[in-house]
Image (cartoon, rainbow, N blue to C red; front, side, top):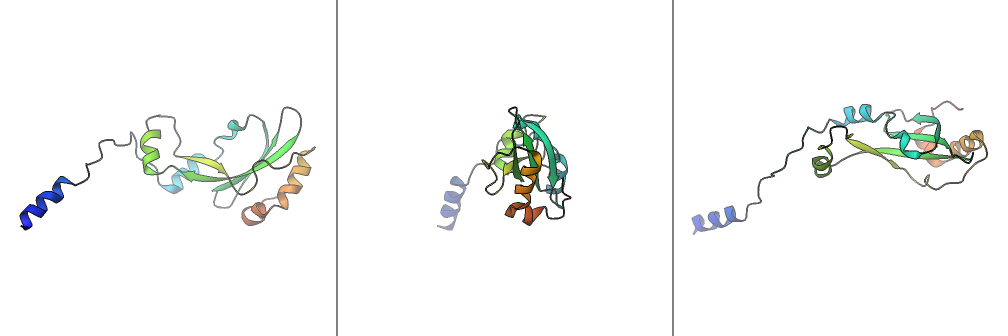
Length: 137
């Protein structure tokens, strides 16, 4: 009877993974270093200032639009999980992580000057939590 149960269990054993990533996913410290100053061009606006948290896992960006207005964004670095990396690693230029908006900083107000955007950023909870040691503009 035990032999029969063992044979049933082998029938229902999950198949071995067929796909393997084209390259190994780097360790987190290497991902942080690789992602420094990456994906800034994805905004389409002029980047006025970028600041990073002490651990380099969060950043703020002050941007100037084509129409002359300013805004800011706060982002957090995330790494692709193993399943995502399996797909993403096929592209030799793919980075092992991405920057995503943090907190309520996406879709914030627009400002007339970079200084006004900076002043608003200074009063945000995200700035106070992660960038308090960053020098002002």
